[in-house]
Length: 263
Image 1 (tube, rainbow, N blue to C red):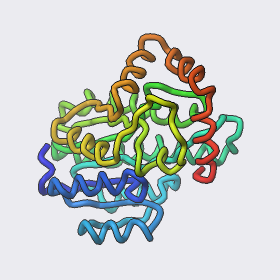
Image 2 (image 1 turned 60 degrees about the vertical axis):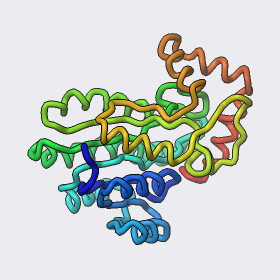
Image 3 (image 1 turned 30 degrees about the vertical axis):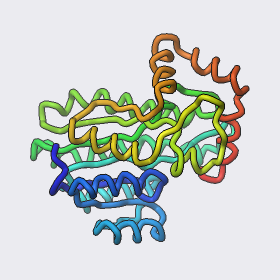
């Protein structure tokens, strides 16, 4: 799909990766509808890019419905909004657990469902789901986050052949550890030696490539992290056990503690 002249709805525009994705889409000639919870961050970005700013909380079902009702003719949706959802499962209050499921998994599925009739009628459109390498290599202290991101992967994989006959594309993008901005960068945690990172701009470029080339899946991670994903597919749990021996679970527990305030 050529993005020039299209209208793209981007969720999570006020998050760490949102601005990079928005700028990359704008550079391709797309008009943007940007959504997020923080108006103070959302509105300046929208003004910079000549975009429409829509304040929305995706943990609220009415807000998801409002997005679909008001912007039902968009050509592309980039489902980028997510909560960190890290930490031991029994450390979660049920309302926090529900919020993570609603934002990370329910909202993308429901928004896709609500926008599908118009896309199928036009026989064109594209949905990009920003998942995570955690979907391919789940680790301790991130079981809830991994569940939501693995859910997105399964949803995208099943939906892609379902919508292909209608001319609607479906892609999933899997960022690893991203420096400079985003969930990991905000924690300030130091990774074990040899574990590399990528930039927000590389994630944004992958989102654009997924749409333009109609790619099913794109990993945005160093070779070693990608290899861990392949290894985990062959020997489930092995990369996690190796990682635990290397750093004793330090990275996961430190990230969980730093992200506690974002539940």
